[in-house]
Length: 180
Image (cartoon, rainbow, N blue to C red; front, side, top):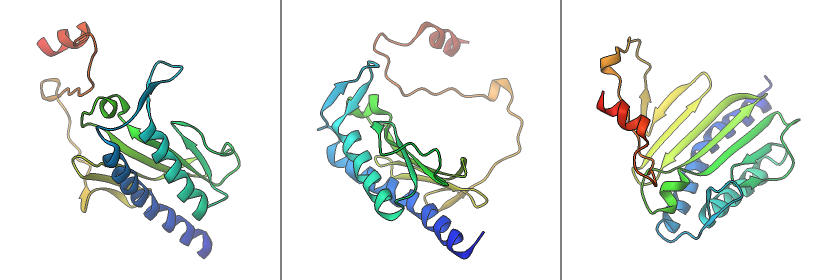
């Protein structure tokens, strides 16, 4: 890898966290005030999600105009088929919660290098948790490195958590599983 490529990779690895933090600030500005609509797939879409994706996409395009860009809230520019780097944005990961004014949402930003995961960040602005990772450099929660533990999980030790609201109550299969 050339020096220019190393610098470009380093810049992108740092930018994922900066973009996730920026998106989180924008999300909090609109939290409890977002305009909500239902898209063709009968899913929530918010004006906040669209605005955050646009802001992050513009920053990526300004800094790395040849990179590809894909966003959950719709197309951004040309498909990233030929780009060495491709960015993946989910401006409001947990739109259902966000649209209902509930915590449990995040801003997710990832970048692929040669179609392989390279760096990513997920920021929960309510909890102020910033998860970051970069290929070959590990993963972090805020300023703490995350460690993989080699441990066998027993069935009795397994845990199940669900934060998503269910319009018609808890689905039967979840209720049965929780009562085991």
